[in-house]
Length: 201
Image (tube, rainbow, N blue to C red; front, top):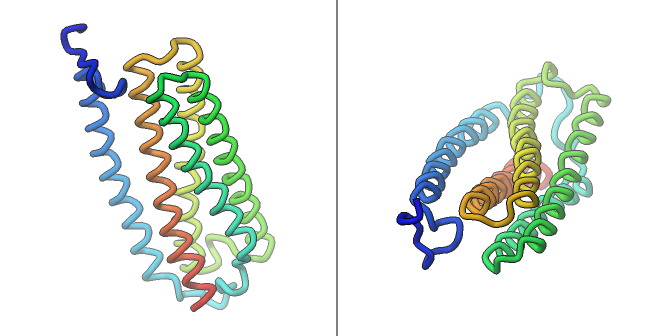
C-alpha cells in the first residue's frame, strides 16, 4: 500500500484508492444532476397548473427565502474554509469549520420545514395542485439531500476526531465538500427559477 502513496499530491489524492473514489463520486454527481434536471423539467411543465389553489404570489415570502439562501450559501463558504484548513493539516480548524457548516445547514433545513408547514396551514399541500406537487417534490428532494449530508458529515467529523487526518479521512472530507457545494448550486437554481422568477414575473 505504501508504494501507492504519492506525497506530492494533496492528502485526499495521495492513494490510488482515494483517487478512484473521488472519480467515482464525480460520476455519482453526474447522476444527481440528471435527477434534479428531471425534477426541474417537471416543475417547469406544471408550474402554472394551480387547479384553483394557491399561487406562488399567495405563498412565497421573500424574507424567509432569502434567509434560507444566506444560510446555505454561507455554509458553502465555511465548508470551503474547512477544506482550506484540511490542506493546512489543521484538524482542529477543519472540524470547527465543518461543525459551523452543519449548524448553518441545520438552520436551513429547519427553516424549510417551517416554510412547508406554513404552506400546509394555508391549504397548500401536494394534493392541491400539480404546481404544488412538483414544488414539494423538487424542494423536498433537495432538503432530503441536505439532511442526509448533515448526517454523513457528522459521521466524518467523528472519524476525524478519532483517527485524525489521514488519506482516508481527508478523502471522505473532500467528497462531502463536493457534495455540499453541489447542493448549494442546486439551491441557487431553485432560488432563481422557482422563487425569484415567480415573485418578479
